[in-house]
Length: 488
Image 1 (cartoon, rainbow, N blue to C red):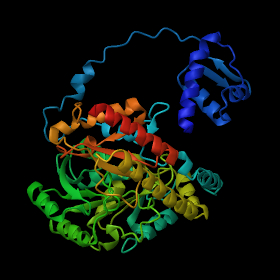
Image 2: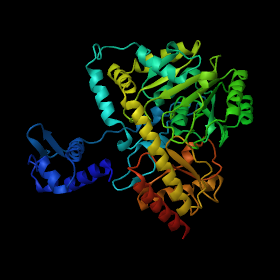
Image 3: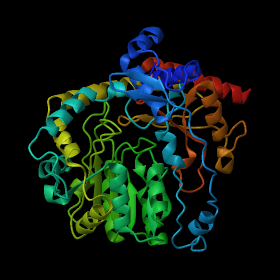
Image 4: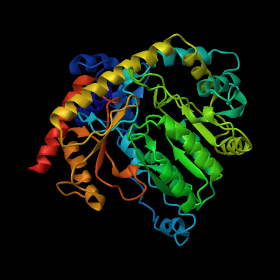
């Protein structure tokens, strides 16, 4: 069972037993809880911390855990209805809409209930994260001279150099800014490159977090379809002409959600089309370090092939390490770099120096290449297991492309198209997602990946967020049960 599920289950058991103790009464010791529930001391500690966060228990170092005193009667709730008027004051403006829809992002961030298999996760399972190496790196970093002082605004020079080497080509350390995760880097890029109300070209389908960023900034996402070879250049050119956009956001390597890699014959064409349009290409190179064991040589980032400053490159360590290891880079050439830097400084000042120092320690340690090799082998194994189980148990769900990198598969539902694909009817995407959750497996619906009407219903299934192959087998079995329930 996943550690997170064990923590939730233990917290629920302890929550149900709190009435046995008077307020201030002492709970059994951690050792007693370990022996009684046959869980690890870490699970007990985290479960008690969860109850403490809920205000149900208090913990005292060296003394133990105690039932919290009864809460005082809550003060009467005030009237916040005035906020509805204040927040919608610019609702009549079509130029800069201010509503923010985070639902597409929360699908992959929210932890499923205990016992539910996590096919909707967007990060490596803890068993795949280099926790020991990260802990050692953070410990060494904290002891470096000056580790807790203010870093350079652009980031530590050595870390900028490391990211620049990973991009190659004309990109040097002076062209790199260290940022706090890929989401932050994309936010900075879009704010720098497009004014509120402007169109921005996006792949279709694409990463929901990027669509949320664009809409929160008052931008208008314009979809450009992709196929198994990436974005279609002729449609990209048409979209630039029709919209007048000056920005195109893409993921040329193991695109989310399709897993497509931009074909060699299209790479130069995409850059040429953007250059002719006087536009920037924001390259989100988010999973370069999650390549599978059988992938072969990877294409270089688009930024490495761009001498003219068309590409603004985003690279990150987060996907290959941990959701909390939020260290990434923005790379750009020309005057745009100063604008990116100014926005970053205004928004966040800088990335905390201890985290930057820890990143340097991690990527410079012998554990780093070992970790990448381990993950490459494990992701290939999990991908193959999921593909095999899906083709055997759910042949009705089309799998047009099996990627050689990343952490997920993109499935197309049969039958339903257009508006029908997201309905709750027997053929609808939403109905299958709900039925799957009832069956004990969380999957990601396809609708949030489209900025316009989707051509069909889809599911995205992650094979990186589960504990191992056994959970993949069980998860597909549960998904098949949900599918059969809907189809009668």
